[in-house]
Image (cartoon, rainbow, N blue to C red; front, side, top):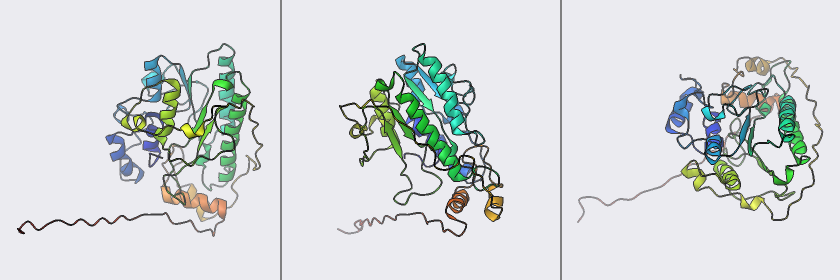
Length: 323
């Protein structure tokens, strides 16, 4: 992941860059030391100078559409997204299931497919894997992640059974690797590449970044880079094969109930009510990580310590007085 948190992550995931304003202000905003959440397009000062993917699509004359990315029920701050939105698709809202979002996408997609007007570039947001912590009565973290997984699976299944499947590719990525450091690296995150032309049952070990994902999409659609980062990023060539397999995907049924609720009323559930979950990343990072870990692993489970590295570089210089 090129990003640290969602504030800069949404920019990295859509423009391969987070500008100076974003990088300098998100630490104070996230640290509770003042400032507002000026990201996801809400303030022009935080927009990437090289534009976003939708700007590049407009520049190239390609059709595009957003389902909840930098948008909410047809509303957006971004000039070039206006008129390119699904008005019935909700943005970030943990009280709305992702399988509901899938149904909204499906209805819109089918209507466009029937008139051969499916846009060349589509942005879809499924966000319930964020979870709502341990609040009593709300879906459990496991249920919300299962909801997210099921929505993605149904999305791929429906697309793979459509007439445009042979020409389609789906990239699934997170905007950042926040909320719990990975056991290898805190910037590591899953990325799925799904297409008739991707290798089946394959795990690719090449070193790719968020910008690599964007660079690959740009090359497929013939778009120019937005920054030096996607321009220089390594395309994801190793994920593809010359021999396509157009067989449709079949989504697995959820093995965890989507209606499973948190039931334990203790310190961790009460702490969850102190978090602001109305907007993404308003909850304190480490505390929210601990709540989710204990809700899933058990109240006595110990959260793994983050991995940190130290780099020591001795530099020797000559005495200026020496001959």
